[in-house]
Amino acid sequence: MSLLSFLDRNHTIARPGFSRWMVPPAALCVHLCIGQAYAYSVFNLPMTKLIGITKSAPDDWKLTELGWIFSIAIFFLGVSSAVFGRWVEEGGPRRAMFTAACCWAGGFFISAIGVYIHTLWVIYLGYGVLGGIALGIGYISPVSTLIKWFPDRPGMATGMAIMGFGGGAFIASPLSVWLMSRFTTPTHVGVAETFIVLGIVYFFFMIVGSIIVRVPAPGWKPEGYVAPTQSVGLITRNDVFVYDALKTPQFWLIWWVLCLNVTAGIGVLGQASAMSQEMFPGRITPVAAAGFVGLMSLFNMGGRFCWASVSDYIGRRNTYFVFMVLGFVLYCLVPYTGSVGSVVGFVCAFLVIISMYGGGFATVPAYLKDMFGTRYVGAIHGLLLTAWSMAGIFGPVLVNYIREYNVTHGVPNAQAYNTTMYIMAGLLVIGFICNFLVKAVDARFHMQENDARGSEPGATAAGARA
Amino acid sequence: MANTTQGGTTALELGLAWAFVGIPLVLGVLQTLINTMKLFY
Image (cartoon, rainbow over all chains, first blue to last red; front, side, top):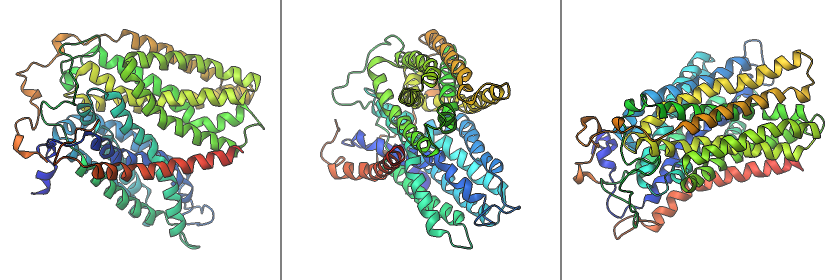
């Protein structure tokens, strides 16, 4: 069997008896690897000392220059998930996971060359562009497969995979620090070698995922599961073609819901350490703030699985209503916790907020499946991720610039974030309204049975089961 | 839970697949928790 044939969707159709519980580990193989992106900052400081070794030399890279690597990667995540979404959906998860593995490992190898020859644009190209493409393709690759295997629990299934993206940093961070310590000598910083080892390890992990993954045979359903015969409320029994979804108001309303929810979370996630120390001067030390950030990362990961699972029971729209209402109350409470000096209240508020930030990411694939059906949900999800890229700009800008404005206009540091908190709460009110306006998709957007665009790849390839 | 029939996925395969992703994740989370607790106390 040739490689191309092995990667083909037809060869990933599961034989009878294949356990659907093999698919979440396959998805996690990819998401745990690409989740390394959240831990990329561990390389920043060592990469400012590649020439000077113990301290930055004049020719060493600046932190501001290195910050672009992550920004480029996240930008290309949004672009590639939108551009390659349909290709991923129609080619099947194995081809997409294999491609993501090649791009991800390739990104590390090219970056290693960039470090070795000390040329920054090579790293922009490697980790930023190629790695960003891997992030986009890898992120959406298992989504529709999981939804098809778990029609009874789509939120839980996608929540498991997307939890892996949040959890990847927990593995990558200590692993990268350990590897760098092994390769660093008194005359050399071991970043390039660490990149090469990470590239090899991640390639192996992601390839294992692509080998394990299977798509269900046409007509398969879980034992005892009875699919609804007609649409109920927002949950449709019909499919919407990927580009037709863009013509529906529902897509853009959910786009804004995600964008606003992520904007509210991403701004505080990046500034949590500084914000906690400034709001509680002398009470939250830099060391304690680092612990707080670690705890937030755990809640970010846990929220992805928990909230997405909860959405299977209370519904997607209701889950987002909870995010918006609870988020509004908590953001309004944060300035109060600062004024009364309640560190516990502050920490608890932000832990819940950040769990809802992660929950927003994890619940949205199932929300899209409810609205647009399963056929093109991965591709539609890819298009929706442009909301993430947008929020990645909005969130930090809101937090940083408003704080800066307040401080330069004489507002004490401890109160400099209050306006931002109220603005975040206001954004969630808009998000609530957008979510409220989401109704079932009009029947004119539904694909017909004889729609040539929607022929299920592999549906006729009964003899090619893996 | 699992749709396993004769010739299908075995419990060993299932266990290995979950251990492959679960062990690194649990170790990473534990490491983070230990660091977090150290920092707070």
